[in-house]
Image (cartoon, rainbow, N blue to C red; front, side, top):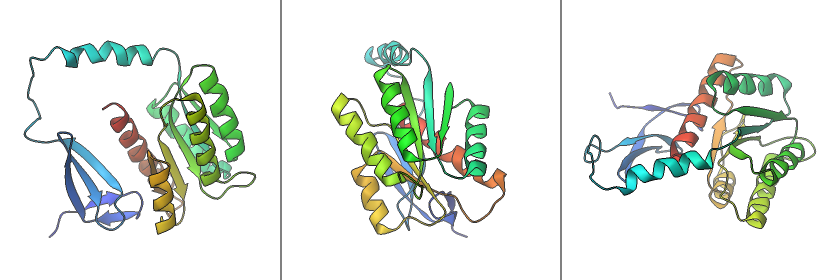
Amino acid sequence: MEETRYCLCCGENVEFNRIERDGRLEYTCIYCGFPLSMEETPLTAGIETGEKTAPSAAPEMEAEKVGESYILIAEDSKYTRKIIQDLLIEKRFADQVLAFENGLELTTAYSRLISEGKSVEVVILDINMPVMDGLTAAKTLRSIESQKRIPHVPIAFFSAVKADENLRTQMEILAPANYLNKGSDPDPDRLAERVEKLISYFLQIRQQ
C-alpha cells in the first residue's frame, strides 16, 4: 500500500513527491504541487554546529516581533469566518485575529497596520467575495508592500473549488501564496483542521 498524505488543496489523501531544499525534506502533492509538510533531513537533523552566527539570529528575530502580531481574514460567510477566527484565537497563532467581510476592508486594515509598524503573520482570503474578491485583494496587498518596501506576507486563498491552472499561476506571481480547499463537508471540525494545517505550514516557513 502506497503512503499518502492529506492535501489541503485537493481535499483528500494523495501521493506525494519528496524534495530536498535547504537541508529540509519538503513533501508536495503529485497532482497539484501543494506543499504538504516539511522536516529536517537525516543529514542535518540533530547536528550541532560550532558556528556563532546561528545563535546570534535569535535576538534579531525576537526584536522583529516586538509589538502585537496579526492574522487577517476576509470571508463573506459569517459562519465560516467565525470558525476560522475562533480557531486562530484558540491556537494563539497571533496576538490579534481580525476578520472582514470583503477584500476592500482587509486591504484597508492591512495598510493601516503596516503604517503603524505592526506585524501581520498571515492573510486568509476567500476568492469569491462582494466589493473586492480575493485575487484583487492579494494584488492590492502586494502593491502596498512594494510601495513600502516590506516583505510579502504569506497569503492563503480559500475556496470551495479546487485550484485550477490560472489560480496556480496567480499564486506563483503573488508568492508566498497557497490554496486551501474549504471542502464540501460542513463539519466545522474538518474545516478547522484544514485551516490549522495551513497556518502551521505558513508559520513554519516564515521562521526559517
